[in-house]
Length: 408
Image 1 (spheres, helix red, strand yellow):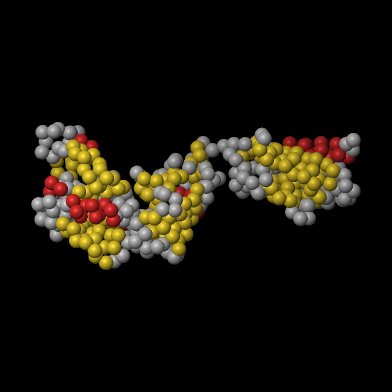
Image 2 (cartoon, helix red, strand yellow):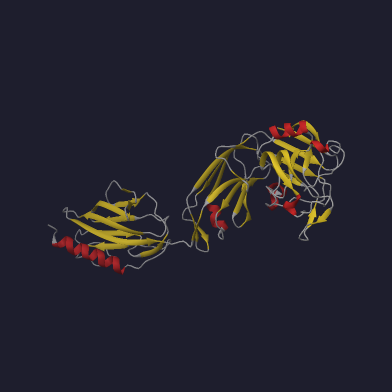
């Protein structure tokens, strides 16, 4: 049989919950219940009567899912605390002295939670108290993916070249970038200084001042959940990844000498005759200006393809009668820009390689060199193009290394 005292206390608990003002994260928010005889809701309990305080407050709305549910009792002990939404229960821990309880499980967006508390006074009489609160409702929830580039996902645990930055893509635009960066953690072994740069509203890259040291291990954690990304968008699930830097493989392609010197771990291992972009411009089918210079600046290998269909129609030259028109399947291709620059085999152009630039912008090499280069270079390795009048853009591939460190 429930005692009259228990019924009165429970009734007061509900009443107190009804009159407690709601609040948002960062405010002091608690629902308080006291047994009859206390001087008031905010006074210390009199005569050994139980006082229970719950945070967030009863009927609070827009509660951050990062907030903890905290239950405290004065002049008594907590016997049981449950926090539920639907059929799901939020995990929590009771302190050893039985006077406080704190949630350990996560809250979710857009949910109403019911907090049910059983507390006993010094005489062992148990009273129950109940309140509810509601978590915030985002206008959108953003997820993240890790990329080796926009064409290729980063392989967790993979090995990449010294030129690969940390690349994080958000599924929605991020307005509060500084706030987002607080949740974006990069740790390296050995330790190295680095920092983030936003390439656009949805893509952030982290890199050190110079190319990675071979053997560096990189761990990335994005503690995204609950983060306010701006304009009503909040972070979705947390994400993490790790990768390792392999040997240093850097090719320096020189448009003047028509040679590409290849260095592995600082030692030159091959000097490759090449033919690069012939230069000049033409006009595309829609009036666009098309340049045939290979872009100068550090490029990063983005894909490795045994064969790739290359056609001038992809950038505006569509007339088969145009001398610049082509549509061919090319072998042994390593992409180094989004605009269509590759290092690839060109067995039809051996006479020009090492002597003159005749390509439409790619770096073409002979069959033996092409096979060796294709078998040797991997994603993240560097192809640094020099001595052309056209500069590579930050966003035309992995152009991070075209930006000086003091401007990064």
